[in-house]
Length: 246
Image 1 (cartoon, rainbow, N blue to C red):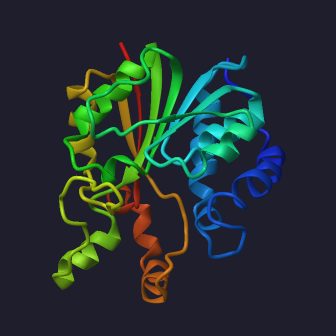
Image 2 (spheres, rainbow, N blue to C red; image 1 turned 90 degrees about the vertical axis):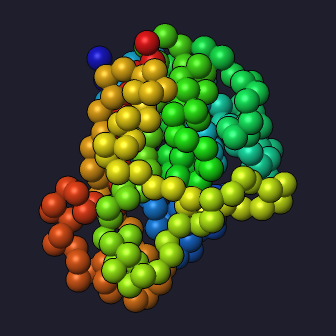
């Protein structure tokens, strides 16, 4: 039995508890621009999770863990490389763990019913299956991972390719105080292979258009002009993967 979706509650909690602490509350900030992504992922989680509170891990940021805590009182945990937002998350009842997925240490083992892995895998300079296997070990048997990542064949990338422009960061290991942009993006088939190589089962990957307005005015106009092309799944911005641990 899935959980009931309460849009009104989400619309109240998101601007109150997420936006002011994860990028501000103005119309151009990250959380406001990507609200549709968080809503899409939480709604999908709602379809998959049991009604009773469960153990949830959000790898990267912690917004989704916080939403699960506020919406359903799940036993929520956030794992990230940086600790800047840990005090706030802990004050809201979310457990925090520092975890560098590029290192072999495994701080969490067989603990979670669901793991969110949203817009992270494209930043990691490792084969995706290595990171996904580490996350699989953090899941309970038959646990679920919900992963979103940019689609390699999205229109943004095709335009950059046509113009001969670089659209990925240089493929390098994360430095102590550095930041990695997108070092790799996956096609649907490529991502499917990574999940299967990592030992997941029942992996389903769909093309998804999680609407947002690009910051760059030129690309915002191009997005509006090219919007009809999103009817073709292959050109949509995101891949949304759902898979189970054995």
